[in-house]
Image (cartoon, rainbow, N blue to C red; front, top):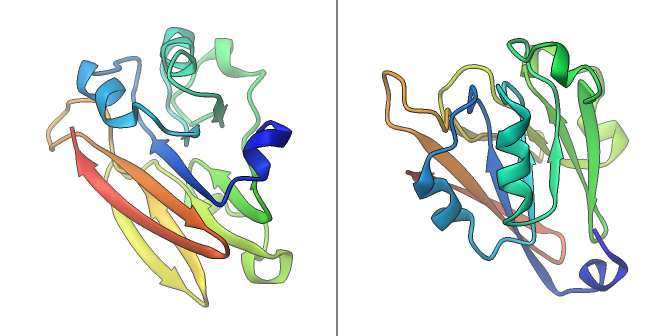
Length: 157
């Protein structure tokens, strides 16, 4: 985030996962106006990241279904928003840190195609679900950050 964005009172973060090469038009409308977009893997094609980048700056991690084109993407990433740390990993079972010990306030993940919001030991665990249209209703999430408060909501697209 830019220095100016880091001094804001609040942030709206778009969270998406499992696009598998398909970015629905409705996603752009839902994410319009966010400060940042986090993609939790299984992107599918670099064009998805390019399209998301036209909406807001993007942080993305590589998923298990991402091909050779994605080898330059990290498997995990720590994203700093204001004074808070968010940890991004595609498959939460590959979590390689202790979020509480490292001061992470939220773990963002995907992989299961099921949207979930959980609180574990004071850490928010957010899976935005699957943004591609497969067997279930496509979903994305919004992360609302104000001061040290982090709240998530899942939206159908």
